[in-house]
View 1 (spheres, rainbow, N blue to C red):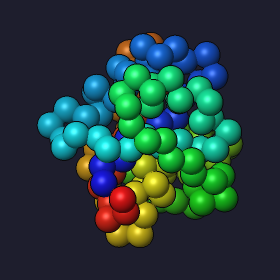
View 2 (cartoon, helix red, strand yellow):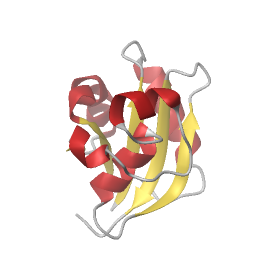
View 3 (spheres, rainbow, N blue to C red):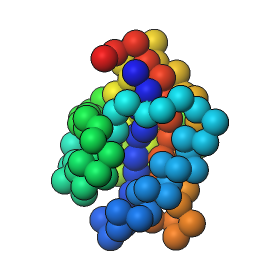
View 4 (cartoon, rainbow, N blue to C red):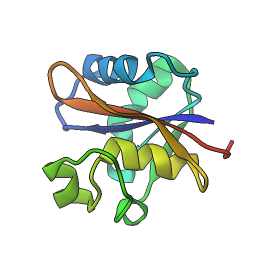
Amino acid sequence: MIVAGFGFRAEAPLESLRAALMLAQQGHPAVTHLATVQGKLAELLPLAEALELPLRAVSPDALSGVITPTHSAASLAAYACGSLAEASALCAAGNGGRLLAPRHISHDRLATCAIAEGPLS
């Protein structure tokens, strides 16, 4: 399983989510799942539908304390993890998951995406 984890602002358009995914995915295997925190699923659904990929919800409790290579003050304050994108990707990938690409930020800075690989299907 290759998971693209996302963090984004509420006003992030579909183009920002796509741009962050394109940046993160370069040079990595094709993504098989998208993931984000439960409270943001509705905003990520249009991308999942456009790409015909399943969407995984990650509980806020699961994100808390996940160690990530990058850090955002907003993610730390809201979710107690360094990067919502990285933590979402790792949590959705399951035990034994590993980060393939740290978070990449869309050019408009409204969305981030990280890629993780895991054993779950």
